[in-house]
Image: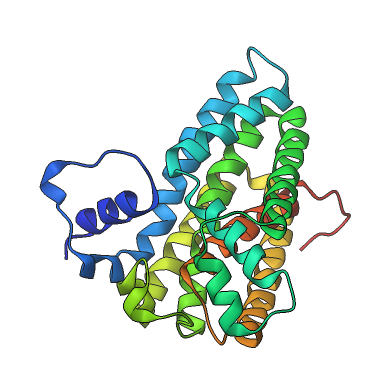
Length: 262
């Protein structure tokens, strides 16, 4: 399968952005396009970051961040945010595995989902504002990097855990089969390239990048244990939640002001 077609398949799956008509679509391509979630994330981050940088010329950092986040939600259709809300609703309370899976299939928003969205989006906004106050270009670059790298987390989770839901009724059935070692390796290669890109533009961010990666790694291990214990694996909603929480962890790591050097 040509890489360009797989990239456009991932773009079609994760965003509302148009793709060339020649690409077409086959459900089986979803199983192969997972590594390209990272480049798609970089594109989403670049568009959102451009909005943030441009808006900072006209408004305060808080308004610019709000506009950038709104642009990101529009581009993706709130795809990952929806997964975060459903995961919070399903796993927020002390319910059985079967009940949690049923709740996550319900399209209605509950109290846990609303709280999860408010807290995670609010913390992301606050973190981006703190970065934009220092340097709008830094905040824009942070958006590109965090959006790209956070989309590696769902792919790694798919490699670490089995699918926990009903495979026959999965929204993206091919993704329920997990990913191959080759696809995982390509995902990690794209993630490493994103880190190299960040350090190429801002080499002084090496300590902050290290902290951010540690935060994202700790989150990944926690989510693996949490999902294995509560569900016995992952679902599409929990993959979306991992992206949102991973993005927040990465941004918090970049913005942390700790005297750590490594």
